[in-house]
Every structure is written in C-alpha cells, then in structure tokens.
Image (cartoon, rainbow, N blue to C red; front, side):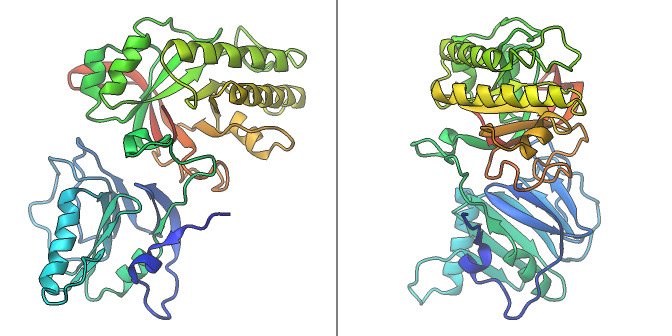
Length: 397
C-alpha cells in the first residue's frame, strides 16, 4: 500500500512530543488530505465566492479567495485557521522572497516554509501538490503547527494518476466543480460557464438516454476541450430489472447486454474524438437493492461492462446512487469492479471524500465524483442551464 507523505516530514513542522490533533473529518484539495479539527468550518472558495477569508475564527478555506469577499467592516484578532490555494508563481515568490530576506548571508537555496512571527503566520509552499498554505495563529503557534503536521500529500492513484504527459491539463483526474445536464449546451454557454466550473458531463449514447445528440459532435468536443473543459463521458444503457425504467436487462441477458453496451459506448466515444484511456461511466439508475436476484443481475452486468470496456482500451466507470449501485459494488466479492465511480447523494455537501455513506477505502486516489445536488437552474455569464451539481476528485477526459 502506498503511504501518504506527511508534510511534517517535508517541512519539519511537527513539534517534538506533540499529541495528534483530533480530526472530525478529512477534506481533499489540490493533492492534499487535510484533517479538519472538530468544530471548525470548511469554506470552498471560487471566482464567484463571496465568503470572507477570516483569521479570527477557526476555519479551513479551500481555493483562491473570490474577487468580491463579503467581509465585516470591522474584525479584529487572530486564531488558528488555514487557507489552502493553488501554488502560483506569485505565492511561490512570496515564500522564497521572505526566506531570502531572512537569510541573505547564508547562500542556501530557498526553502518551502516561512514562519512570520510578526504576522502570526506560517506560509508553506508544497510543490508536490501544487499547493500554497497560509496558516494563522493567536497567542502561540503550537496548535497551528500540530494542524499543519497532520496534512498529507495524497499518494498517486493505484490505476495511474496521469497519462504520459506533463502538466495538470493532461492528468487523468481533476478536482473541482462540475455539472451535468441532459444535452450539450451551446459553445457560447460553455465559454461563459468555464469561469466557474472545470468539468461537464456528456451523454454519449445508450437506449435509456433521454436527450438526442443535438450539438454533441466531434467538433463540439474539440471546441470545449480547447476552452479547458474536462469531460465526464456517460453512457445510459438498459437498466436494472427491478428499476422503474422502460428498457431493462434481465438476469439472463445481463452479461450480453453489458458487453453490447460497452462496444457501442467505445464506438461512440471514438466518433466523438474521445480516444483510448478515456473514462466512460455507465449510468445505472437507482434500484431496489433488497431484491437479491435484481442485485446479482446488476453486479453481473457491471462486471461484464468493466471487463469488456477495459479490453476495448477505455477506462470503465459507473454512475449510481450511493444507496444502491455504489454500495452493492463496494461490498461485492468476485467481480471486476470499475476503475472509478460517480455517486449520487443529494445532500448538498460538495466533498466527495466527506460523504458518510462512502468509506474512505472505496475507490481511493482521485477516483470519485459526487453528484451532490439534483435538478435545478443556474445562471453563469448570462446563460441559464438546468443542471445537477458535481464535486470532482476523479477520472475525466
């Protein structure tokens, strides 16, 4: 088993003899696993976020601060708090510049950590994860040191963290906000929405797909990829025997139907310019998992889908409810499981690693997408779409 790399080991932040901080939950951001002490708030920030990054309350802030923060007119004081954002040339230069100013005579290369007692801050640049951390503290730095020492760099995913390219744009996985909608939006809408999202679903085929191809084409895929979009290709074929849908497989037809679905999905992906090693998620809608014959048919279907799609050169994934398909797959024995999952739990909590129904050892290592809010309308850049919301730390194209 790969072991996470402790920031304490990289940066020497752990105090001798310090007891471990008690964590209520873990959050994941920019290649880091961050234990959040009990009672702390977690704020996910973005370009349109109005959350105020405040160091006078216990909180973890994830992402670059929004351009228009809604901060109180008068706030005083500091306590233990952490802000994690992408490592940029500007933030890296801040750390190296401060270090150079403190050790002008040493001639040593710049380090990764600066403790600024005047500002009651510790700044960390973590190139391994492309992350920059600002930690604040109040009377003393001990609590902050303990919190920072428990942050780890996630190990690479077991099935290959990246394709053989350089740069985050070519990673097989991505973190961030995504959405799914029934049809391919216009290119103008995709350009406008790109400011607030990193990934979008595309339904590439299947007998249970509700919307036609519409705008979806090889040229559409190429155009949105050029905008920087990452895609979640999804195939909606026949559904579980005990599901409420019109086209269903049976226990006897499950294996043959799954293989045919995988072959059709691969053919359609190629026509859209989605090359080998692209993940394709099978949309298995919710079903009654209390029907053992139905449950076994679903597992037979997913086993056959996974095996055949992998032989065809694509990465097999599955979308389903956390309470039916995902749960059954996680506990199943003796089947070939999908490389990645996209699970639905509409609790409006956007952390794919903080869901109470998903054990941490289920699909670890950048192989999860969570659909956390269902059917509703959102407007971005003047374009309104009917969408579901997704939080990604998972495989995409």
